[in-house]
Image (cartoon, rainbow, N blue to C red; front, side, top):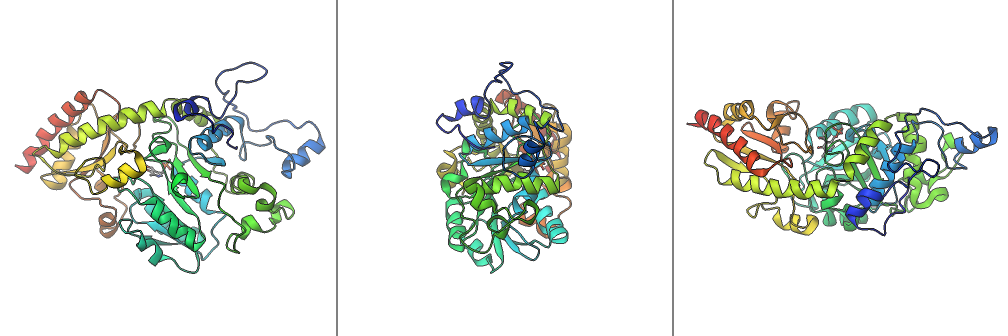
Amino acid sequence: MNNKDNEHGFYTKSIHAGYTPDSETGALVPDISQNVSFTFDSAEDAADKFNLRKEGFSYSRLTNPTVGALENKLAALENGAGATCTSSGLSAHQLAFFPLMNSGDDFVASAKLYGGTLNQFKNSFSRGFNWNCIFAEPDEPDNFKRALTENTKLIFIEGLSNPTGVVTDIEAIARIAEDAGIPLIVDNTIATPYLCRPFEWGASIITHSTTKYLNGHANSMGGAVIDSGKFDWSASNKYQTLSQPEPSYHGLNFHKEFGEMALTYYLHAVALRDLGACQQPMNAFLTLTGMETLGLRMQRHCENAITVANFLENHPAVSWVTYSGLDSSSFKPLVDKYMGGKASSLFTFGVKGGYDAAVKLVNNVKLFSHVANIGDTRSLIIHPASTTHSQLTDKQKLMASVHPEGLRVSIGIENVEDIIADLSQALDFSALIAA
Ligand code: PLP
């Protein structure tokens, strides 16, 4: 669960961190520990593990060796203290919020988020948990400050947003969170730790959908919560779950007992135990395998994406392109500051001819896969207004910058000339509608 791999560089950690070859068998890659339960040496051993007096595995809803290897790798790549894996990216939000929010509390979230997250925050979190979301437009960091209330327990942003690539000023918002004595949570799914490490800019917690670029091969759902270990849960009375005795562990005080690992231990021992959204060992194994090539894939994703974005920006049938890595993007200075000038491979573009032209283009791509996913090795396309964001109201769609003529692409790592050739021939069809 914790990170002891910080002395190496990114590519080395991607391959080696999180796991050492099995001492009995010498197995070089982690075994898929497809186990529900783990035997105890004695009644005392069982009692010690159940009461968190001793580390070790008991039941896979709480901890599992393969999932643990992925948690260690994620903590190492984000330079965090510890990580907790979940069944999906959305369940990572629920898990991260669970120790920090009480019924009736507020949280402030960027208005530019993945559509599923907007739904989750606006509708399900308020109805199911009475967690009240106040949205702030991320282009102006002071909007987050203005949105704070006495009951605000956290701020949530996407560093690089899905689908329009809005880049949020992490450092400025982290300062606002720090002044308010609350943690900043950054969803780092789209940038990945290869491009951006939010803890270096003051974030306290990172969430991921590991389903996307981390896994990279579209073969398993997953999520993660990574804790920097730096937030002082006992500095105020706001986070009593972590700083006061926990009734279900005979009064154990997680912050006092586990220090920088308090949140990570709580997420496993209480939140996963009670909410149950654990990651499956097979999924963790597939994601571990994918992550070994994260840096190489991201390099190539970024190179291909900027080439494709430049092509689209200069195409007569295209009216706008949101790729924040373009020199013309207003977000380029933030891309330079937070992501070394590279902007991942997810963006939207608009075609002349509106909704019908966008649908025509989707129906005519051949190499692109028409799917509701991003971050795969393959190039992917979808029409957000009629699919991923269709459950939002018109006002919410506008808030999320989802337009009828817009298409979302996740540029893969194929030969870039093949990607451009496919878009080029499909644009010929959509141009017929515009004509
Ligand atoms: N966060 C971001 C930025 C996403 O793009 C997504 C899904 O697309 C999620 C979270 C949710 O992830 P999952 O589908 O694994 O629940």
